[in-house]
Amino acid sequence: MLLYPGMTALDVIGPQALLAGLAPDSLYLVAQTPGPVPSDTGVSLLATTSFADCPTDLDVLFVPGGDGSPTQMRDAATLAFLRDRASRARWITSVCTGSLILGAAGLLVGYRATSHWCVRDTVLPLLGATPVDQRVVFDRNRATSAGISAGIDFALALSAQLRGENYAQTAQLVAEYAPHPPFEAGSPALAGPAITREAMAILGGLVTEARAAAETTRLRK
Image (cartoon, rainbow, N blue to C red; front, side, top):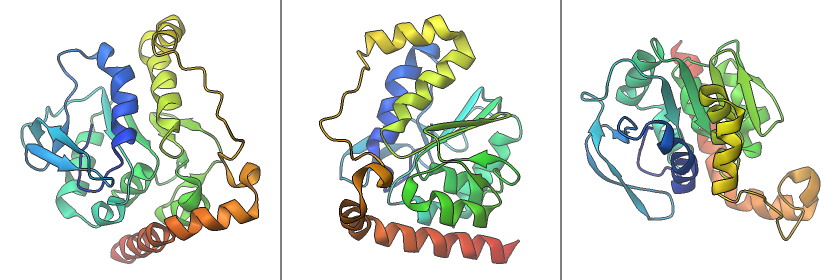
């Protein structure tokens, strides 16, 4: 599981809480260098493994999203690490704008994928992916999910692929994952134009930076 400055902590912690049982001694929190890595809300997560020390052959390569994702889309060391591990990984996965980082590494060209709604349809195509409006999208050995909270859905869906549906359903019950949100506002279609405008006022900077990073990536190719 990749960590980087400005990641969204829930993008990591939600899936990690459900996937840790599948790899009790071999789930690595990886960053360029070990140590605390600040999230985009200020909470730090502890990277225990460096790029250099991360195993070369992985069952799952996972990339979270967050406000720091445009910077990672331009980071040569991060992109080189992802390309190398992805060349041998069984599954290449992401939550939220983590798919943009995979895309910047050239790992989603010709694949169906999703991301946070604010960038899914406008930025993913710049990186060679076909955007899909779904919570979780599988295409061959790529598994991408929509924004933040969709990481729980992703982890359960991936668990079913790795260990079977009974295991995934048991994990869902242990986590008591039976969401009944207080509002029907989890997508632009449900939230309506006024709330969507309010959300875009918060997300606009990320969208602009991600698009610029994607354009830079396209120009380099």
